Amino acid sequence: MITYDSNLKIFYSSLINDEGYFSGFSTRELQDGRKIENILNFFHSNGINFKKLVFLEQIHSTNISIYSSKTSDNVEKIVETDGVITSEKNIILTARTGDCCPLVFVDKNNGVIGVSHQGWRGSVKRMAQKMVGKMIGCGAKEESIKVAIGPTIGECCYDIDEDRYYEFLEEFDGYSKKIFHHRGGKIHLNLTLLNYLLLLESGISKKNIDYFPFCTKCDKARFFSFRRTNKKENFGEMFSFVIKSV
Ligand SMILES: [Zn+2]
Image (tube, rainbow, N blue to C red):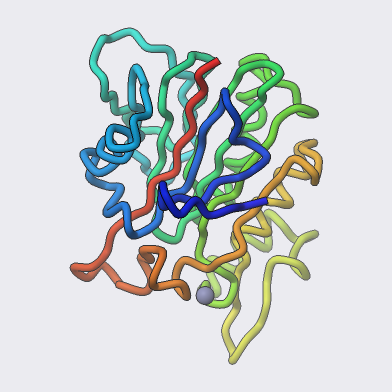
C-alpha cells in the first residue's frame, strides 16, 4: 500500500519500508528535486545517515548503471543514465520526475535495490523490464523483487498525439484496450498501468507491486507537473529514493 508520512512529507510503499530499507516519493513541500541541496536537506534534517547520495543525468534512455562507490565524495552524479542499481548499503539512489514515472525496486532477500526514471520514451522501450533483468544480473530473484510505482501523470491528463500512439501500438498492441482511452477526440495513455503490466510480464507478482493512485497534474497541492506548468517558473520535480542499511 502507498502511504503518506506527514512528518517526512513523503509517500512510501509499505511493501518496501522497514528497519533495513527506506524509500519514498517526495511532495512539493520538499521543494524542487532538481536542486541537489533540497534532497540533501531532506536527509540531513531528518537525521538519516548515509555514505553517499547518487543522482542520475536522466536523458530518457534505457541505460542502467550498476553502482559501486569508488570515491569518497558524498554526492555523485552518473551521466547518461536513467536507472541505477546497487548492492551496497548506505547509498541513497535517487531519480527526479515531474509527470514521468519513477520506479523503486528492492529485493530484500538478496540485498539489491534500484531506482529508475521512465517517461514515454523509457516506457515504450520497456525500461521497467530492463531494470528487472539487471536486478537479476546483480543477484536478485524475480519472485522476491518488490516494486513501487511512484507519482505519474494520470490517464485523465495524459493525451498523446497520433505519432506517439502508433509508436506505442506497435510495441504494445496486446495491451491497447487497457492502456489507451479515447476522450473528446483525443487519445489518452495510462503510463502507470503500462509500467505495471510490463512488470507483471517480466515475472514480478501482483502482490509485490504497489502503485500510486494520484495524478501529478490533477493534484496541484502535492505534486509538481511538467504539463500543468508548461515549463513556467513554478515548475519543479519530485525526487524518488531508496537506501538500505542492512
Ligand atoms: Zn489528471
